[in-house]
Length: 640
Image (cartoon, rainbow, N blue to C red; front, side, top):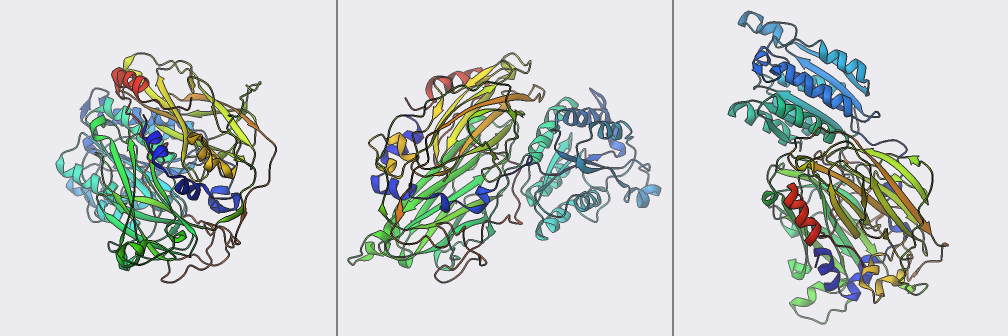
């Protein structure tokens, strides 16, 4: 039995009803935006061209290997990506007499503009390694050249530590973060020693980025394209900035809305919510992980735990745990809970401090930590207050939506890197996209009350073959509150692959009363709004294959005439999640007031692509042929 199945079974009917009692109006405004263009973070490559890069390598010299790696990335990067190139060490020698000028020797060879493969390749071809290593100065110059707002990334390759400090590159990275820049630095150490590794790791961790070792040229040629691709299509965590605390009594009080905080390894952090009598409270946390190469399956797991406390810090004995395996593939892990304590009447005693209206405290812990991840990661928080209903609308229905295969070549789309940046599919039809190794992409479909959907995903061939090139592919269907409805996965070796492997993935018609259905699987389809389709192409099993793009065809059926939905007992006002408010959202110390729509925070996130694990859905690591076989036999979960 899957983790998702176990969780569905142990939910009480009342909890399920509260969890799913959200209308279309309850969705965050950010989630209702329709991105019209691919969501890629402008990215600057910083290349070390100091004299030490002339050392021999299987490619000829280390500089030759670095050039090959950049060419490989440029050749496979999305056409819509914005990629720039900065280099240091090309204009002087590396003698002491040349140090002063050599430590100013930083050049922007190409600004981060829409991908120009010819210009970038030509710039790379002309690089000659000879000088010093002004890494800190190069980091500042690259940051200044990137756009002034929105998510940005830097990928730096160096074969040693900074030889020109000050400025110290780690201190520069910390300064950039303190300035509030939404900037992530990913560092690759090319045959470095312990001192350089520590410096490069510090730079990456200071910004929530990743550090990777490349022992030689062939390793760099595998790792650089992957890290750079990950930097382009980030999971873009968004929300109003908030800072949780380590004690419940000092926790900030959050109004309904979406917030952005950070969470450290093993850290316990609290946030407070004022819940009116009779209302249900909804709270979730989404933690996004960076993509990392060469992590073993036994070290590739994370858990996120949620607990709820009442008056005077009374433990309400409410506990939820979300778990993610294959975290190094860029998973986004969500744990969520609908709390109905305020709907119950207190009668006295310490246990009654978790009943009735009042202030409640929600505590998250990043409990199990996988290898290689940054010490802190951004976490999205979603807070909702939901009234009861007086009329729930039509009765529940059980038949799944019938799938009709569309015709034609398809409409090109570009999947987004997260829930909030998902690409909109306007209705039934065939849609085409291209994804790369290690990417998750998201699409969304608007379903009104009474409507349903069904779909299949086709992965096209790309010429790979053999055990060394096995990847795991997956598709997951989510409801509007990011709860997984269904999921299926398989292995991919470069030949045509279809998911689901059995019948199409489908919902029942969306009705409020589905939450009370005798068919447990249909209770997740009880809220109208955006439904999300996640498509994944995992990294290959040994990281020896080149990062060839894979064509994706998504065949979609949307059926049913819109129906009237439920009637709430009181007005929703500013919205269950504060998405209709016009005032300024901020953490408060009193009863929540108006809140603005979700805003992109200045806090940065790691280079995670869109995730496919939500609300305690466990994925099996697909590592090598044996891992694929085990996953296919024992861990697939689908509705019958």
